[in-house]
Image (tube, rainbow, N blue to C red; front, side):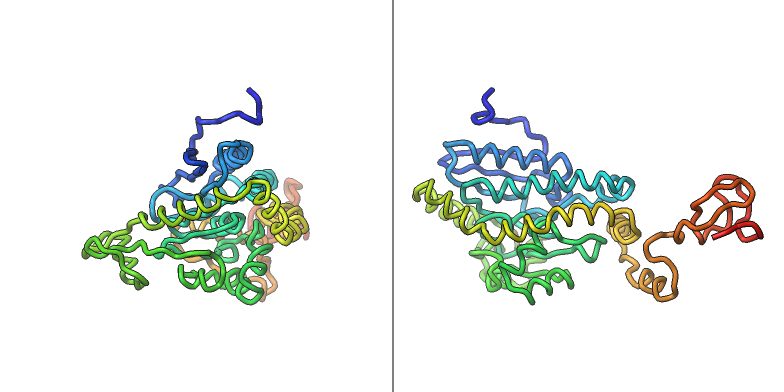
Length: 351
């Protein structure tokens, strides 16, 4: 089959559909808040390329399943189980992630992020890669990298300062605080906010955090309804359909200048640094804490460094040699050799 006209349909973790000149790409992993797996990244890149090459598609809408999450970035459980054990493979993962992000930026067609729920971490980076964004009022945006042992260098460190300004970018990246929908609109993270909270069947405008919480739990007559989000996204999409395609394509390419400049100057370095960083204690602690649903021990690592101990290696640097069996590169905080079991605190053990 001709790669330019091929239409893949057997996706496992996403939905792909098109009608009325619009292709809709949906991450279908609601059980993990639409975080993307390694396989999902590959499927997304294929889907965006497919929509890009399809002359029956004028506009692409990108969203997530359900009403809780647009996308929450990478699957932290997969990170913890796979990449903290094999950091060199994270370099490969980042190549897939980069290809996915670039598949959005390089579509040559407008991409609208339909923010049906929270856009967190790589989810925010994903919506930043899009051209336009419409957010449901109950949704929010945020970054989490520095809190889970990673760095948001897959679009956020590159693009947030361009979109919201330097101080706001640092605020989001360093504090990891949530940015509610209307604050996101004020900051320029999105183009439009639409009501999504209902009380007794009627939409509530400017719902309070308490009302949003009740709606997400379907309590006291409150509920989440995405009908107005769909109307707003469809209206915007059809407005874009009625523009000349080559003019839109070149407009996108020209306005991508700052995105492309920041991205291509930094992503290679980020890919290599992150793959090396995955061999350290920070991502292991941060992602294990996430899986175990506890707070990471941030200050413990700081205290170890302040005490002159290693904050990079769990059992200290690999400095000891067993005088009994000759095993080398044993962590300095070990009391016994892991090979022969001999005590390591006697004479003949060296650093």
